[in-house]
Every structure is written in C-alpha cells, then in structure tokens.
Length: 188
Image (cartoon, rainbow, N blue to C red; front, side, top):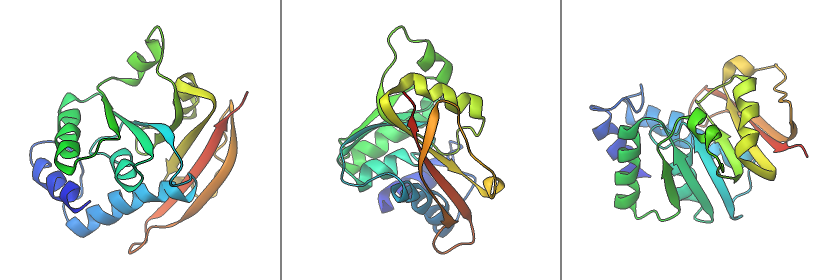
C-alpha cells in the first residue's frame, strides 16, 4: 500500500485524486477508511465486487490488495483516473482488479448489464434513489456496501429493495473521523 500512496501523491499533482496532501492524512482518510469495509464484508471469501466511482482506488484497489480472493472491478467515468489505476495495479502486480471507464447511466443502460455479487459505494452518492438503482447490477442475493460519513450519525439508512444485514460505525484509527458502513442484501 505504500507504493499506492506514493503514486497517489505523485499523480495528484496532475489529477484530482484526493484533496488531502499529507501522507498520514491520506493513509487514515483513504486507506484505513477503505479497510473499514471489512467490518461488514467477510475477508478471505471469494466475491465479485464493483467499486462505483473509485477515483484514486478507494476502497476498491485497497480491498483488492488486502484480499486477493476478491475480484474487484474499479469503475470511474474519468478516463485519467482509470489510467492511474491501471498504472498502479501493474506496478503493484495486482491481478484481481478490472476496470470500467463508464458513467453509472451507461452501466445501467447496457443491453445486458454486468452482474456483481457486491457493490461498494464510498464517496459516490448518498442519494437513496441512485443507491437503489444499483440493484440493477447485482446478482440475486447481491450485497451493497454503503459507506456514510458524520452526517449519517443517528439517521436511518433504509434502502427500498434492500434489507440491512450488518452495520458498523465508529471513528477511524488515529483520527476523530466518524464512519458508518452498512451492508445490505438485495431483497428477492
């Protein structure tokens, strides 16, 4: 993960990958935050996962690095970010990552949509209507991991068409940043 961090800082001068510039802050706010997904999603279990709006690879690339049994598809509509992700995965020798340079609308409008066992949404959208549409790319019984910040504290995070299975909330290590991670299962 150190090389991912180094490349992120290097490429951030040309691309808008993160607003954070301090390596410690990036490590906490992006890398440790990405790992919080494992509070609700099992590690070492094979899973075909889509990271919607992955930007600099968060959380998808971190998940692919931490758990080689996860087949992670990194999706972003910005082609420059996909170029960055391909560069980093080649440099790190990561073989369980794939790439989609698409907008969500184009993903949904495909004649035969891709189907995933899980979708993760970190900084992509908090709009329930958009999150509910993610069921279109989930296989039956598929899971949605929703990562929410401090504004979600104390609020119900119900999603039509999904059943909440597990949730975790707390502060990220080495910080006072609140994170809430909710695992939903697609209703039949």
